[in-house]
Image (cartoon, rainbow, N blue to C red; front, side, top):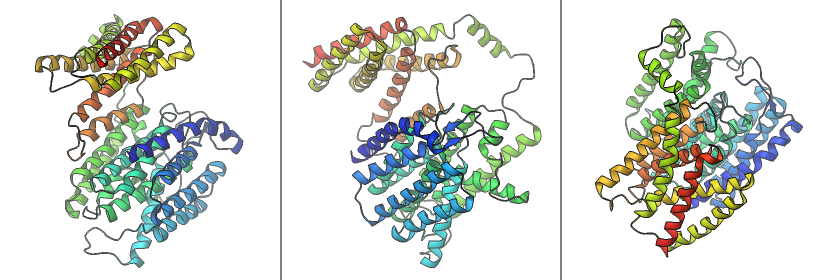
Length: 539
């Protein structure tokens, strides 16, 4: 429960701080202006990292055991925060940036004993005169790798959230409570920031945020692999931090090959290459999420394999990724083409169905019917309804009736909150093993239809009342993968299935509530119905 508190405290603090800090950005000059090297075309505040660091540090300070290592790590965070804020305000020379990073790294290495003492293909421990400089070099490199990868909306935050979630899971399996708590606090700050940073972004994390993420990920992966679970291969951090490291090495290698400074700016990063290949913003970010998740999956399932095998796998993946970009460049391959060629039979069929409204009207009506139907079915056929849930339902019922009577735009937020809570209650009340298998299959079919209807609605609807963002892709990936990992140690074997169904119901409900007022009358009736049934059965 402490881990959840760390996550929530950091999330809430970050979300509360972001609006006032955004207003402050112009006063301190922390505005990211567009130029030829950047993707965005308007000025955007780059102060999100300030809120992220404050949220994380406050959560860790309040909830962690403040031993020497934690104090050193928090001190390093504050140093990175100070130099990052200075950089966002004044665009520091890279030498001063390195000085700040070096100062923070030395603090955690010497004072916090965050040191790489095991090295691939070497038995035993490295002596401190080798281990400490190696650690300083690694942490500075990782800090800059994440900083350099922050080139698209939602990219650095999303990949960092995937990475830090994997670190938390691996540390939890090895009883590394400090690493789990710090990881959850930082994950909360990332999630609090990302809703403002998904495309099109209204806020950037700036160097404050990207350096903080790189610095913290480097520290956590070193503590995980060197102290918490030293039995894992020393090459596992290479996979956990996989794509940012590969991207940085490839970019620096190309700059040196072209006899340019390794610190000279260009558009040769992986995200730039994906855009050049014809992928749109969402697609490029999602592909990077997917590749990073795949590298982490290798780390999770092969953490105890030999160094030689892991190095061979990483080299093979690197050659495949970089080779694909090179092949696309020399052949001029594009993912999206506009060559005027004749549409395929499938595209023609889709166009006809879309022009007649079948790909929008039918899915919308399915959503409006299936969501409230699942609500009511869950309450009616539940094996048992606890009294505590019935008491909660009474308050929600009173709140919902009051909202419907008042009917203002202000109370619409409360109405949506009630719907989301009812969705959670509905999933909780859906017993699996007690139901007849045939009836259970019907419920599963309804969820499949809900996914299909939702996907068609999002893809083909002309009104953009609901749009999937890279953050939503990320949430779906984490919710589906994490509860179903073989060593996740979840007490309830149904947790994975419940999590997936809850995400489906959340997004379907949000899509329905994005319609006009008349469009979700069935949702209101279903919500009133399920609350009434819960009250009746609970008492």
